[in-house]
Length: 566
Image 1: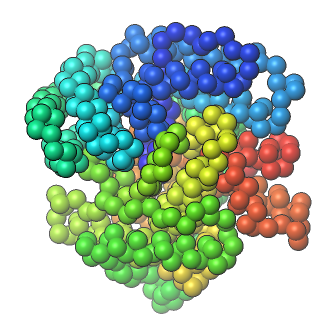
Image 2: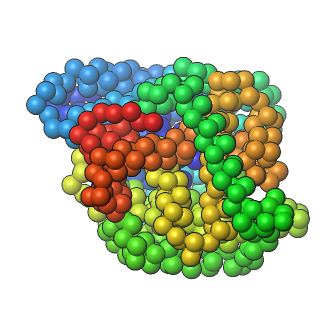
């Protein structure tokens, strides 16, 4: 899912100046907290469906963030001092969920500091400030166009401040930022004007063209700085930061235990992969994967194939009573926006949880880059072979992320904390668990090819876990991580580097395997407790009905007590 591709997307850096208002209840503290977040991070607020600041950009100055960090600490103290003795289980969980999210924000502000070390942080903010305005028709085109013009006009000053703050930047961060910047230039120069081409207002069109031209010039100037920037930083977070990242998702399992479980799971998934490969090609099992890779759609049929698959998957979920679907609406299947293609192969994005009107969701798929050679483009299309694309569609849409979004919008009565929650392990853990569960239930007519691609993706997610902890606390280099992805995880050379590189900027991508293992442990515990009365559909509905909150909270609410997550 798109929200979880880089850490800055997951742990919002924006906060508002001043301490929290004195509050007598959890609801009042939460209300003050979220209104502060939206006021200081208007880019994220737009994406979340809060539109009071649609014409503003974020303040990412060190002074501003330092002031906001003080506010976060004050909120933390106020939450910890709350008397929860008479609160319900959900209210207690909500308090713990908000406390955990504050840990994540403080980690971002005090340790990771993307505004100091990651140039892509600035590119992310400028591109998403516009994408949030054009992706959905939450207001009239004229209103959104005016907001876009206002934000475009702020780009030159915003980008000119970045070189004064950026230092100790790792080489890999420069590489990723440059790729995304090239996409941003095309997006602002072409996609933004196209999005508002139907607005028949000469004055606004002139203002948009002028502001866009100045914004493109500012981005080009920023790129000149970027290409001359001497890399001298280290992306490694260290053990304590990784522990805090886990704690931000209410996980207190030691990293070493998680690494050990990840190794065990990798070996199990590799063994299963080789066993299924032998079923497909008994004489040459190692050729099974390459045989399947030849069954891929053309570039022109890539998106239509995904659309056909998700319709079939919806029918399967309904017929097999796997999870209750609050709505039968499907997402729009589209090409990933160019400025996000460097780190995303496929993703689902749903409207912000605080939008007031119904808006569509999107299933984004990244086509091979026009810059690739014919051989590289063919290899990229092989990565989208039909069974692999089907497994991706399971993960992203049905019954994966898209269904999570359906539940989010089906429960407007949820608390502010629960509606705003975005647990990485729950969000990605569910979608990854869904891949395995759908194979277990016989999707694609019990196809060995789908099973093999599901296992390949499982192996990949196991390696993400090992690479994340390996690079950030065990001394693994990016080259060694790439080699692991290729030799142990059945990844093509291009995909291996791309996957390893992602772990430098998105250390939390261990959450796919970690979340799946926690869901499987919860399922096993409930099956043992409930025996023949256990219902898979009720189990899945209960997870979905809890919201995108950490799995520790979901476990508490489904079992009535705390328990081992793994």
